[in-house]
Image 1: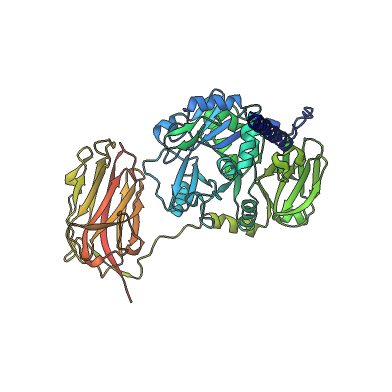
Image 2: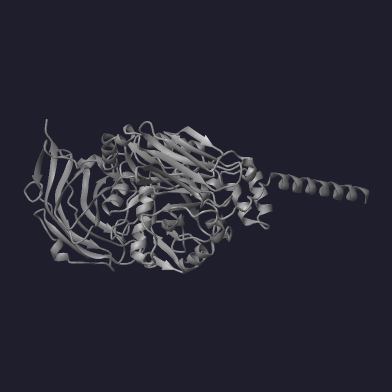
Length: 589
């Protein structure tokens, strides 16, 4: 009995100690501030969140429920980015719902990390897995891209394509990544606090990765790269298998880290116009990120001014105006006492103040951005870190601006066959007999695909996969065994009724195996509504078989195929692709 009493008292002491530790670790509440004067650009502001998953992929709620949560959280816009390619169902949800602008993008998984594809249509083609190819596809669709959770702790989530052309920006903060790296103690404190204040509990995960910020600054020294806060919100947490915890809710996460945009004009309630306005600001970097879960960051501003003109965040300011002494940078914030404002040039602190406004003249070209730091007593764990981070204002020479624009569009040029000798496959001894092949549910104009002259038409309708028939395809192929060891590439002309991705495949016999045991090697190309030349080097093909011997054996080719399947084409799609002037090419000495 005496032992039980002592054990009970000991447990109570431990619980009391834990409670005291929790209370002591909590940040103070940020005091309410007077409304103050309205910001000059208040009528052109929009606050919203990026990187939200719905029930179209692995999120917990449908689009209307997400819109309601956004309205309750006081948002103007939400950018959905379900996994994979956007489809007609998710795109139908784009527009105003419950007074919130719902925009639909996509999170694409590549071999170099994940990419958010924004302002893209619902394409017939499916994205590939090579990051440079995905970025080029997005650019050709007139969209723009952000690297999602670029410093994620899971290797297949981490972004590696920093130098690739076409990348518009990054998630400088990702809520999911921020929380996944927290200590067990901090997670425990958040769990204890959450029932009493979900905002303060979730704020424990609001932390910038200093290495990622440093990386961003190093990239900005060479090229433009906008930055935004992403949530990776799912409305639930996966515990194991199909078991999920319905926490944190969309509404709770929507109040943590938000993006504040400075638009070219006010939102007018017209979905098409406001969609373009929001996307334009996101692509240019016209705005800033704020940990609103710690304190409301809506009273911050940062701009450049010269004479009667002002430039918002994300702008390029001509450096020749600096020589005339006509450019000033102005940062301001309405915040609690102890808040510090900083202006940085090329990642280094240039000036700092604890007053509400910081104004300084620009003396030399550079990349300028601003930060606001709350007193650490208001920050979970007492951390010294930014509360608000702006996108940069670029003060650059004309030559620097042109160089940066060229870097963003410096996509690899098509392979040239100028120094190759090419032979038409319609002529002996390389004549190929092409035939249509497809699954039973898909349809093709088989007569149009028949050819021995190196020109054919793929008139197709790809069926929907089912449990009974998970793999659907339409292809045109030649199954004649042949030796292509004297060639290095294939050249062709292609036209499509729409933009389609076509998989070009060579199947070779494995050494020492039966003739039926083939390995599949593949690359891809795109059609367009105008004729274009395509050159596919054989050494660019990659094995898509479950096992590989590591070598494409061109002397043991068992077939060449042009394939449309659910991996490169939207199921249910139909269309027409024409291929002509098919040639085999070999390098000349």
